[in-house]
Length: 210
Image (tube, rainbow, N blue to C red; front, side, top):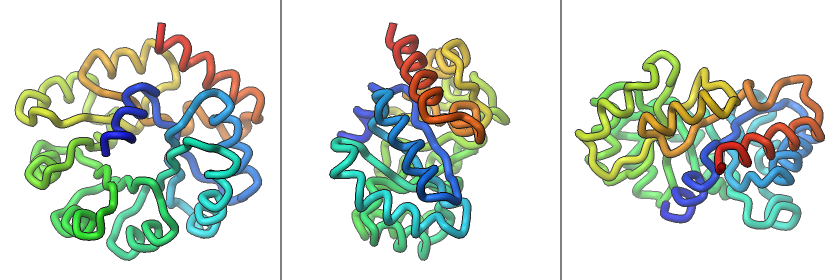
């Protein structure tokens, strides 16, 4: 966890996306990588997800050295095992349960569970996890993390859902206690080309690190 946690903290954003086309998916990852991104969440949101992800993992260590490529929107143990089997660097869920957490710990799977309530966060906390996704973040608001943080010392929070790919919006979340923000369609639009995505992402990273 320490390596991914540090990379996420340094990066301040975690891009997440799914595309039915392997070629489009590969081009998006290439564009993000060229912008300096080293942690990406591919989402399990379509029929081609497992096949695409398997192929992306096969090429990533050669074409994108140092990239941590994980899978998101994993909702049950079967999906967790499927993606662990193809060497996902981490697994992100939109939900949390004792069963999911225990299974991940038993199989030595790096799990970043989705949490909404303090009770959700507590399941992660009691099982020794140190990073949770707050989802859907926009429904909870930018004061939420600061409010729950004191109750869970050492826990790190990554809000995802409804966050704008703009420096001001992300900074507000970071100032509110987040270590990074998950960015989906606000960063990776359906019509954004590779060059535009690289430029947009690179500019965002530079501004966040100023």
